[in-house]
Picture 1: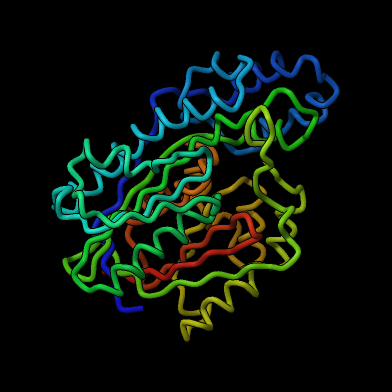
Picture 2: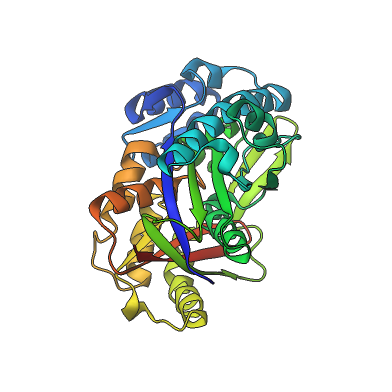
Length: 348
C-alpha cells in the first residue's frame, strides 16, 4: 500500500451510563423467569473486567417489550447522533472542513439504515453532494480495523483525496431477555455503545502512517460469531470456544498477514487489539507469547467502556497515540466469518 497518513482520530459516546454492579442487579430482576440460567452465568458480570458502559437508552428501556421496529428506531436515532459527533470531531482535528471530504466509509452492524447513516447525517454536517459513499454491514468487531484499512486503500488509490472513516455500533439494543440462550446473558454483561471516526489521506502530516493491511478467514467457522435475525431483533452468536480458538489460531494468522507485508513479529513494537473480553485479551497474549498484562490499554478500554464492537479498537488506538506509538504497531480485531483483520501503522 502507498503510505497513507492517519490525519485524525476521534471517538464518541452516547449519553447514558451504567455501572457493572447496577447491570448485574438489574439483570437478576430481568432474568427472574430464568433464575437457573442467571445463577449459573451471573459470574460473567464479575469476571468481565468491566466497570462501566455507555448506552444509547436509559436502563429502564431495556426492561421493556422491545421488538424489531422499536430497536431499529432507537438505532437510527442514536447512530445518526453518534455518527455526526465522531465525524465532526475527526474532520476538525484534521484541520479540514466537511466540504473537504471526498468519500466516507461507514461501518455499522447493529442495525439497519437505508438510506445509510452518512446519507442521513451528511447534509446536516455539510458533506458534499458529490461525496462518495461506501456503507459496510456485517464486519462486526473486525470493522474497526478492516473499515479503516479500506479507507486507507481508497485514499492510496487516489492520491490527494481525503477519506472519512466512521464506525458506529449500538450493541446494547440487541440485549434480549426473551431467550434461554446463554450468549444473551453474556451480552448483557459485555455490551456497550460507541463510535469512532478518522480522516486519512496521502497528503498532510498525520498522527501515524498506515502502510499495509490484511485479513485471514477460517473455513467452517460461520457459527463462531455473528447475529441471528429473529422476530424480536438481532440475537448474538458467541461461541464459548472463542478464547481457545484465538489461542490456537492467532499466531498463524498474524504471521501470515505480516508475511504478506514482508515482516515478522520481531518487527512489531506493539499490538493494538480489539478487547472483545477479558478472556480474549489473555488469549491474545498467550497466543503471541506476550508478557502477561502487555495489553494494558486494551484492558483499560474494556474496563471503562465494555465491548462496543467495531469502535472499541479505535478507543485503544486513541490511548496508544496519546502514549506514543512504537516504530511499528499492528492493529488486530476478530469478527464474524470467522475473521482476523490486521493493519500496520508506523510512527509518523
